[in-house]
Length: 81
Length: 416
Image (cartoon, rainbow over all chains, first blue to last red; front, side, top):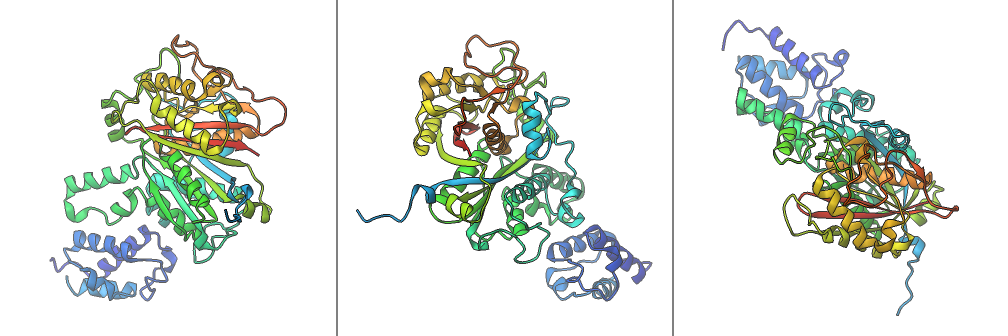
């Protein structure tokens, strides 16, 4: 995938997606947990689709299961760019 | 014979709360009062719930997790539970149902004819235009026919049996009948029951249109000589049913009774009713027997009355078969003249409308009926509502619902 994608861009897409899913935008910080944001497995399945479309990164259910915070998700995606 | 501990009171099932979202507005009261005032909620040939704003009932997250048919059910349910004096606001979290029974003893039965058809269509569009990898993971949880029942169960912590019933345009009545049986069998102490439908999509229009079932003029005028098909509508209604002894013990206000339920099948044709009305009459007769009342005790019939040439003729035969001489002595009217055909929600919406009409001792009108069909010779209450019954005794009614597939479900309702 293009090296032009930065972690900041990934973070922007993740944050926007979480807000679309209904998380309170004010609470979406890097260390916020998905549990606190009321983001569940269905939301993460949607996030995986968005990430695949935007960055060509494939996330499996088992990958996502390990992700607990916003920052975890950004790092996981960024590591696969 | 050993003495039974059951009494009539224990077996009696009461309605303690109702809620509805219909083309006449948000609220059971809007449905009842506007219909009785002769107002029609049909615009441009359809009965849309134009006043319904899901954000009044749902957070952004809840709204995107629910197809419109589920959103309508959630709103109707919130009203019904508040009406029943169940104080939970349904905001979520464990044990916040606010209902007066152990959660495990409260069931939920919701009828729908189609389920989340708009979600299904969206998923199909995405599949075609963008590919399978982009079909939303929310597709199945939104479109499945039981999504509404699941949503109500979660929202109000209803942990007894919950499921959807589907019998096309009889779904709402079958749901209430199933709830009645659940209560009579002792499987639950209360059941939240109703029906919901949100099928106003190009696909459903085309599909019903292809069957020649939809009115080409866009006018719902049941029993009129010019009737040319049904007008599709959307909406939901929910009723709170409880065992009478328990409801009385908690000081609940009783709106009325579900006195009986009868169901049958035409076993005849997948869309057309038996022309002689025998299948429909069998369900009406069964409802009377279940209620333990005679035809001469019935004060009103809320007809299925779809405004299709076939239904209204067959149903007129059925009413005469089931009620005999009584058929010509009582008013018969169709809610669909005011809101169109709400498909899987119709039976529940019409049960609510019937209960409120009985309570207020009023026979609501069949709107748009100005040119009688010589073959259809009952009193269809054309044009304007009339007082119902004499004296102050509780009133009894039958509410008919018949679905494609030949499914017939009839409720016997009594006012408090």
